[in-house]
Length: 379
Image (tube, rainbow, N blue to C red; front, side):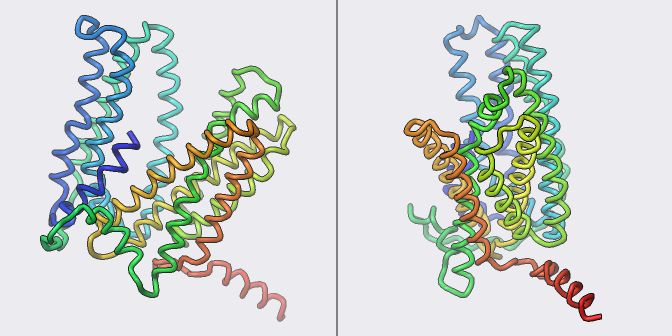
C-alpha cells in the first residue's frame, strides 16, 4: 500500500494544482480504492471463483492496488485538509485521528483473533475484507459532507518527465529559507530510522524478560498506551507551540530511549520503556505532519506534498533495507538500536536549523521559563 500511496502522487500533482475544487476529484477517484475490498471479500468467500493458491495474490494485490488508487487522490485530499483546518488546530487533528486509529487497532486485533478462531482462514479473511469495505464506505460518506473552499488554480504549463521533481525544486529553491528547508528534509528522512529497529523491539524485550510469547500482548498494551499519551501531549504541544517543537522533542526522546534500550534488563522496566518509545515516536510523527503542512508554499502545493510523500517512501524503504542488512551482518539488537538512536538525534539537530513557520506561537517557548527564573532570582 505504501508503494502506491507515496509514489503515484508525483505524477498526478500537477493536475491537482490546476484544480480550483478538489473534493469531487477525491470522491470519484477513491471509489475504486474502496471497491477493491468488496471484490476481495467476495472472491475469498466464494471458493468456486478462485482456488486457495490465489488467496495470497488477493491478499497482496488488494492493498497494492488500493494504495495506487489512493495515491491518485492523496495530494488533493491533503490540499482539502490544508485549506479546511487552521494551522493552530492541525496538530490536535492529526493526534486525535491517530489515537482513534490506535484504539480501533486494539479492538480490531481482538476481532481478528475471534474470526480466526471461529472460521476457516479464507472465510475469516473474506469477512474481514467486507468489514473493512463497510468502514471505508462510512468514511466516503463522511468525506462527502466536508465543505470545501475554492482556491486559485495554477495556470497550465508545459510538462516533461522532470516535472515530477517540481515540488522538491520549489522547496529547495535558492533563498533565505533554503537552509531550513533542506534541514527539514534531513529530519524527515531521519525520523524513519524508526523502521530500522521497530521489528525487533518486542521479541528482544520478551527474550530479555525470559517470558513466553504471550508477553508480546502485554508489551503491545504498553506501546499502545504510550502511543495514546504521545498523541494527547502532541495535540497540546503542537497546537500551542507549533509542530517543530513537537517533532524535535519526540526525536530527542526517541533517540535517548534507543540509547538505553540495549542496557535495560529488568522486566519491570521493559514495559515503561516500550511505552516511552511509543510516546516519543507519535510525538515526532504528529509534529512532523503539522510542520510539513505549515512549511507548504502558497503555490504548487500538490507538487510540494507529492515531493514530501516521495521522500517519505524512500526513507521508509531505506530504513527497512538498513534494518535487513544490519541484522543479517551483525544479528545485534544493540547495533540496530544505536543506528536508530543516531538517526533520531541527527533529525533533532537538523530541526535546530528550521524556523517555526507559524507566527501565532512563541518561537522559543523556553524563553518564558528563563525570564521567570531571572525575575525570581532578581528579587
